[in-house]
Amino acid sequence: MTFKTEQEKFWAGDFGNDYIGRNKSEEYLASNLNFFSKCFSQIEKPSSLIEFGANIGMNLKAIKLLFPSINLFGIEINQQAATELTSVIGENNVYNGSILDYETKSKFNVSLIKGVLIHINPDILPEVYEKLYQSSSKYILICEYYNPSPVTITYRGHNDRLFKRDFAGEMLDKYTDLKLVDYGFCYKRDQAFPQDDITWFLLEKQQSQFTY
Image 1 (tube, rainbow, N blue to C red):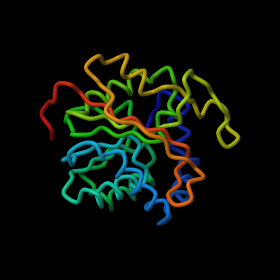
Image 2: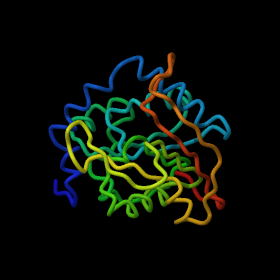
Image 3: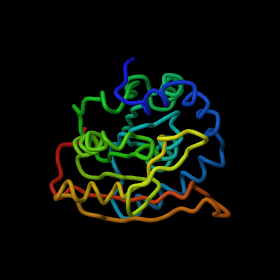
């Protein structure tokens, strides 16, 4: 597998393998249930969802518990994680490869990305925004570290691996048919359902399209 950026190589390799073990707990699944119940509280039940950077499926597990009949699809660059993801949503619903190489042939009710845009090379963000937009028939859910202006910070001792900015704002500026439906913040010191200081934004397309 060949990659366009150093960040892709980073997550496809040993660091991505090690990351898997840090995100398997039942407590994390419970926090995700609470998190996504808030994210989707203002809209109808989604019928289908695609996650960009699904890892082993902890987000998708929670969403499946909330919406048992939902059709789920995941994109994951790390082979070990993608293999575990198949046990959650089925082999045919997993794309093992880079987001940049994924072709948006089908549309889903929701395009989701959580804790992934912050790790993508800023130079290719417009390509990822386009894939998120084209994969959605109605909603886009962005859950990332927020900063009003772009900044780069050290990530677990590595440089150029974590970038904070206003991802949702950039998508709202880029696609004029998107509107902000809801947003919120989850704090890492929440006593019951902590997340990693994530700010989430639910965007809606004004013209709904065919859903896979």
